[in-house]
Amino acid sequence: MAFANAVRASRAIPASTVIGLVPCAQGGTPIANWSRGTELYERMVTRARVAMASGGRVGALLWYQGEADTIRREDAEVYAGRMEAMVRDVRRELALPELLVIQVGIATGQGKFIKEVREAQKAVRLPWLKYVDAKGLPIASDYTHLTTPAQVRLGKLLANAYLSTL
Image 1 (cartoon, rainbow, N blue to C red):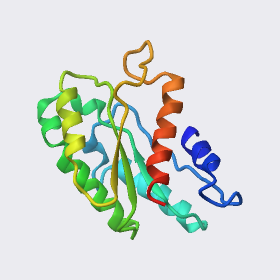
Image 2: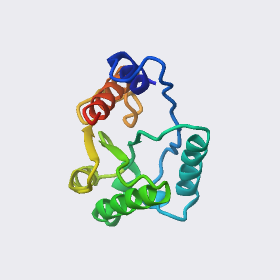
Image 3: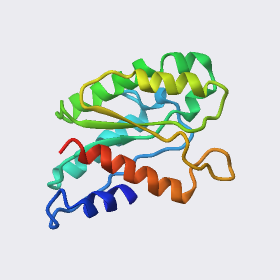
Image 4: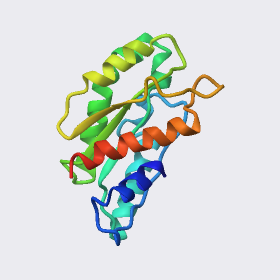
């Protein structure tokens, strides 16, 4: 909601524009679970298609994922390639070749390969892809999730990245 509220507050889009969010998050999942043909991927694409079928336009894919990929070095090492493949597949399936993807660099992880996943996230090289970093935002007492104020700050960072493309 912080993203939508920040976009609305920017006045960069007409006040009559409806900003819809299509949530597809599934905590604790490695990026391999989001590859074409998986349940999570198919659910995400289906939800986007439903939003588009009712007259909506997908303006961006906000991607905050990767903590589970910090557990095994092998997953961290192939993260960039898996992310690039997923983005190419989503763009192709939705017929949105210039779909903006805003990837959030993880702040924490479930394993010891946080640095490797963060480096892989920064190494993703695709057109229409922006990177927003969550590192340094306050972490909640569970040592995994961002605090509520940090989530609001991240929403504003995502909105700024989105608005810079308009």
